[in-house]
Length: 251
Image 1: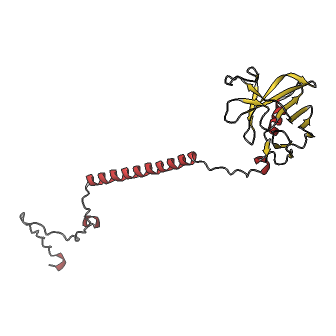
Image 2: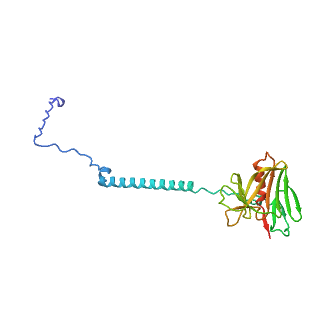
Image 3: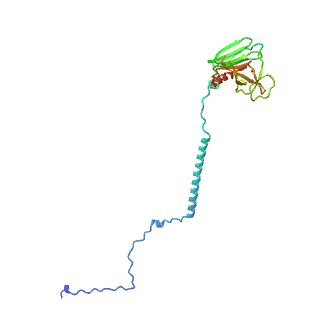
């Protein structure tokens, strides 16, 4: 028999016992995660909430404090405004009569009146008549100021606020008057009379006595009188009053 024709032996399969477990297959070693190796500490949520509340309160308090300070600064700025610088007053503003003309009288002998001085604007015309008396006049546009020192009797001027008086007096209780004080402290009342002089309205003056409620005429320095047109205006009279305010005694 030829060798290649020999019958092939049958392969025998060895049975695996049921109680023998298969050998474990080779596996790669287990890899540990980096995040698993890092342990996060447990957080106290209650403590975190308390800290957040404290921070919120502190921030609110700081904001309110800053707002309060800002409001105080604004109120202080409104309450105390920066004063505006004002220009220095000029000599003319301090004394409007500084550039006026000056008249000074002589003492008239045998009269009790003193010498006096008076300031007046240069656009008023001056007239002086001096003998045993003195008549000083200022004239402008039919307005006149007359200051007279002469031998004359005195009289009390009884206005609506005057106390009762016994003696020589002029009843001026119904008269309207303008009162003002001179720069030297004389208190004068100017009133309109009921008569005319050279077709001009006449205004007379009374002076308040020192330490007395009464007004008298003539005054301490002289008898004063205004003449004005019948259609006079108050502004012209006020200008004349400003001139009389400069009247003062000269020693």
